[in-house]
Image (cartoon, rainbow, N blue to C red; front, side):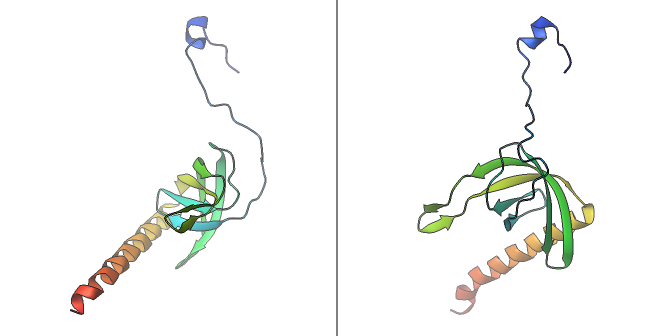
Length: 125
């Protein structure tokens, strides 16, 4: 570790990495995905853990990403009758550009499908 001048050492703060779970493989289920991050249900790693993710999405058999755990839900919780599973939110540090574009397309397609579902009652009047 680098020695800092006493004046700086007094006010300087740094995240100290933990080796807890280093190299451990954990399975989870991808629940929410965007080109900038994802929510994965399962046992959440510690906050600020750097993780590697491998998953498949329609039209893209194998996506590899690197990210950081920025939030986590430590157990299932019911809110307004809906069960929110334990899991963690990952902010992507790296996602291959072609995978990022494909995810963006899928998100737009999903949003458009939701818009159409909302329009059906109006169209059927």
